[in-house]
Image (cartoon, rainbow over all chains, first blue to last red):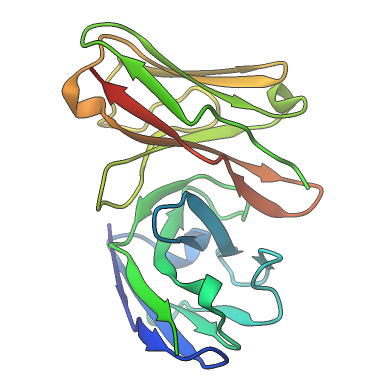
Amino acid sequence: VQLLGSGGGLAQPGGSLRLSCAASGFLFDDYAMAWVRQAPGVGLEWVSVVSGSGGDTYYADSVKGRFTFSRDNSNNMLYLQLNSLRPEDTAVYYCAKGRSWGSDTAFDYWGQGIVVTVSS
Amino acid sequence: SYVLTQPPSVSVAPGQTATVTCGGNNIGEKTVHWYQQKPGQAPVLVVRDDFYRPSGIPERISGSNSGNTATLTISRVEAGDEADYYCQMWDNNREHHVFGPGTKVTVL
């Protein structure tokens, strides 16, 4: 299993970024996928999860309405669109694979982390 | 919203047993997972579904869950066990994943 994230960087407050995560080594549409972030020196914060089919997507209150999580099961890709960015969105963002199809699963593989910095 | 509590830190001598707790209202009725994270690295799942160990996780690491406390136990602690440990569960009522604040395990 490999999860290779890309797309981070520096954005201004109010700006946008798109994160990508390329998955390989497993039957992609059989598993839920998620994004989890970690601000500097702080613990893990769940951001969003999508079921295997992509039919069910859930968001943390802190990002709902600003972030959009999508999956392309044809190309084994995940995308997280980050809009209306705030300084408190500064974090390392991890994509993670669920152990099962449903959204309520544990996460058994994690990407290497994508750094997002929101600052003027 | 459902809140998980963990002690900020646990210190343990090599060869002894480290116990990391995760508190929550009737958490024993929920399914808890545990992750280990070393500095600069991505988290690693060490216990899933309260007490199952993923392949490659040593038998020294075990989990339990009852009442208002889930527990991660690391027996015969080694220097390599020094890390942050996070509990996590799915809040069915809010359809949210929840992580505990994390516990730093220090090997003396």
